[in-house]
Amino acid sequence: MSKKQKKAEPLAEEWDLSEGFGILPRDISLTQNIGCVGGKSKKPEPSKIKTENKE
Image 1 (cartoon, rainbow, N blue to C red):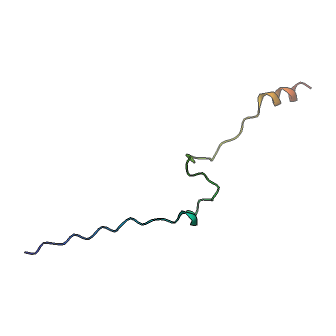
Image 2: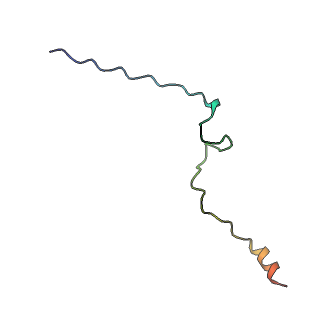
């Protein structure tokens, strides 16, 4: 019986980060959590509501 030789694991490749990441825009900071941005709406500032209703 002959022993099976293990396949050599491929070495890690170095990535050229200057080319970008494909679908991600370049202006996104990759050091912060991007999170889910859908469905949020800004609440009006309370000071603006008070001045509009005083008429």
